[in-house]
Each structure stands twice: as C-alpha cells, then as structure tokens.
Image 1: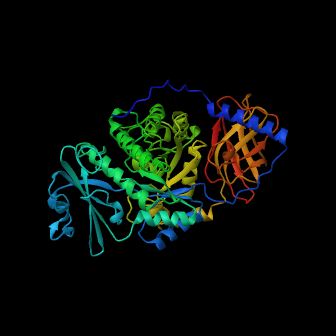
Image 2: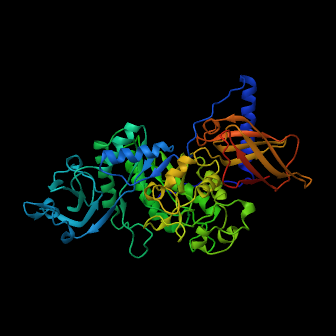
Image 3: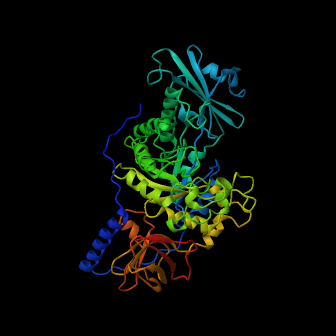
Length: 548
C-alpha cells in the first residue's frame, strides 16, 4: 500500500512569485553594491531545450550520430522508453527458444511448480550477466539471444518459500541498446535515462497498470536493475525513466500508478543508489474532458508523485499537453482569443479561455508550489509536435509538425518554475520533413531568438525580464499606469546577467536583463506587454504579457 504523508495545505499567496523575486533581486543589488559590479559574458546561443526522448539503437555509430545532433542544439540528456513485462502461456513462448529440443521455459523450470509465464522483449542482449539463480538460462538461436529467468513466486533470493515460480523469457539481439547508449553518452559528456520495465495495462480499465502480478513485476524490476548495475554502470547513465504514465490528478483511481513508482524507486535506491529516476505525468486542462484536472488538483498530485521517491533523486518532467491538444499555452489577456487550428482539431472552435480551465502558466506555478519541500525536482516535458491536421503532416505519425513560434510560446508558459526542459520527441517530430523543414533545423537557424519566460514590473519603473538569448539590444514595453494612461517605450537592455538562473537555483540557462522606463507606475491588475530585440538583432516571435 502506498504510504501517505500528511502535511498542512500550502496557502495560496497572490503574486507569490513576484514577491519572492523582489526579495531575491533586492539581495542581488545589495551584493553588487558591496562587492562591485560583475559583468557576465553572453552565453553562446543555443535553444533552451536540454534533453530529448529518443529511440535508441544497438549500433554505437547510429547512437553517436543522433546524440551529436542533439548536442549541437544544446541537448545534454536523452531518455528512452521501457518495455512491458507481458503475461503469456507456455505455448506462447518463442519457438526458437529451446534447450536440447525442449521449450526453454519448460526446460529451465523442470522439477518445480510454475505459477505464470511472461515474455519481455527489449531488443537487447541480456545473456550471462543477467544470470543470478541456478535455474536461469541463456540460449542463442541465430542472431537472437534468449535469457530465461526463473523467479520465486514468494519470498526472496532464488528459492520460493511456497515452491512455485514465475518464468520470464527475454528476447533480444546480440547487442544492447542500453549498453550502447550508456557508452556513447559517457563519451560525449551527456546523460542517459534508461526506460524501466512496466506492467501491461488492465483489460477492464485500459489506462491503468495491471498489478495482478505485482510480486513478479517487483522481482523482475530488481533483476533488471541488477543487470544494469553489472553491464551499464557508467558515468553517462544518469538514471531510469518510468514510462507508466498518469495525468496530474489526485484521484484515488491513479494509486496503482503511484504503486508502480513506489516499487521501482525502492529498487533503484537498493541496487543503484547513485542513480536518479524520471517520471513524466501530463496536464489535461480541457474544459470538456471527462478527466479534466484543476490547478488545485495538480498542486496536490505532484506532491503525491514526489512522495514515491523513497530516497531516490526524483525529477518530475511535466508534459505540457500542447502537442496533444490537452492543454493551452495562452496568457490571461488572450483568453478570449480563438484557439489555433491545431488545438481546434482536438477541442473544437472556440476561445482559449472557454476550451481550457486555465493557461499552462497557472499550472506550472501550482506545480512549483506542490513540489516545494519534497526534495523532488520540477522539470518540464515540452511536446515538440502539434495535433495533426491536413496542413502539418509528419510522415505517418499520429501527430504533426509544429511551428517554432508555438514551441517558443510553450516555453514562455512554463515560466521560471522548471529547472530543466526536455522534449518529446526527437524521433520523429524533430527530424521529419513536411510542410516545413525538420524542427531540428529550424531550432538551429533560430537559436538566437529571444524567449521571454517571466518579468517583474517594479514600482520605480524598472522591469526585470527573464528568459533566454536576452543579451544586448532593446526592450519594448507597453503598459497602463495607475491613472489609466497607456504608454509604450523602447529602452536599451541593461544589467545583463547570464547566470540569473544558476544563482537562484532555477534553470541554469535562464538569463535576465532590465528595462529602465523611468519614473512611472503600473495599474493594479493591468496587463503589460514586452518584446525584446537582442544584440543579434533577433526579436521574440511569441507574444508575451504579464499582469500587475
């Protein structure tokens, strides 16, 4: 049973992020006054996404080519999906897996009582390093390597306390995807998260994991991690990815997913305690969706997920829902504007405010509040595709190509809350051609584009702007003062700080500049708009606004 940690509710403080930022900024100004001004050089322009989901290969050459391409656009992390441990029957075992002409599962379990049979196919060679117990076997048939594990149905170690066992037949090739990616990531100074095994989905409720074989799943996860510790204990292996998904809902129906996280994080802590875990729940803020999730539910849900860490360094990379139409990237003063054509293909025509409960910006603020104090890290998983229409096909994929300005807007909506932004998915959404060139090429050519993630309009007329690629150039601000008068002013960007995020424990790629508007005020509750032209002459290509 999942443990429950009782804690008082987190109070909702209006404009809490602004108040905190004011304190931090004041401290920074005091430090500068005492220690002298420090000028930080502009960082080389790279796109703010620093990690990608990928399909791995058993070929070192193929993996090297892919990871080098990812590194060329600023990526330092790759993540792969896991494979399901599937219930099977003896007759359903691979015919080529035989020992002395006998079905390998039957031969390995000769003399003991078998409870259930399972198959697992991750296209990787496990072989001898995976053999722990006397009944475990490995069989090579042509270019296929089979590994047979005989797991105790009850108890620990190699012998079952009730005399029954579960048999798992693992099918793989002569090389290993995970070992290759670990080696290549290490050579390139990158980080790799290997996909964990997962249970299959239930037949009666197809979005929930089948825990009817929870004991077997637990034992198999342990053996998977023992195998990884033997063959893949390299610097590039940062940790493991839970590919069993859930929405950011605090409903009890999702407790079985939390149980999966509990089981596997406990195993990571035991067998590879220096490695981290990564999970990626999703936002679903559609007003008409049956499972729609409110901002308050998200705050509680991320706290529940963090509770499954069990001593493991846990990153929660929240899917932003823009690639599937489940969520909306819009500012408050855009709530009456029509959804774009891609969102409309999922939720129908209407306004952002009507089709979605709240903008993603509100959800990420709530996520930061919910995860605070848990020890887990908040990441973001930017969906690097768009709902497919006839206008944006991506080969035969179920999703379509997206525009770079849409991706920029997704980044803006995440604000400064996530300490790292990764993206789903390199294959195929960053590499497919269609209406536009591959997104990978568009990111490279647009690497100098400013992206504004947050701002603070101070009472003295200074406006702190945070984001990426902000150095040099000018800041344009449109605002309304307390008397209701509207203004627009363009001033030089001053006080550039390339280490803004690093100094504050935020995303280390975050930068800041200040626009000094002179003596003015901002009307309470009034929106103001910001545009930046940086020293490279590039202007942000996604609308940004904030409210006083």
